[in-house]
Image 1: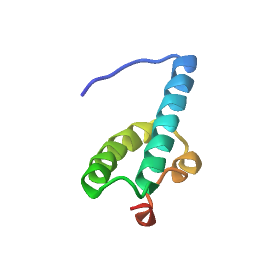
Image 2: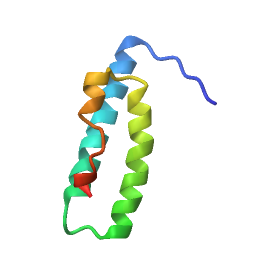
Image 3: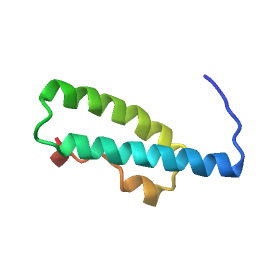
Image 4: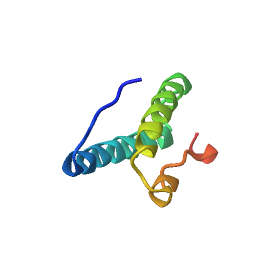
Length: 72
C-alpha cells in the first residue's frame, strides 16, 4: 500500500487526467477496428484506472464511467 498526500489543486488535476484517460479508453473499446486481444488489454487497464478514479469521484460522477457490457 502506498499513500500520497495531494493538495486540492493536485486532486483536481488528477481527477481531470483520470477522466480523460477513461474517456479515451471508452472510445477505444467502441472502435470496431480494434481486435479482441487488444480490447481485453484495454479493459484490464480500464478497471485499474476506474478504481483509482473511484477514490476521488462522487458516485454520480463515477456512474458515468461504469463499464457497460454493451461497450464490448
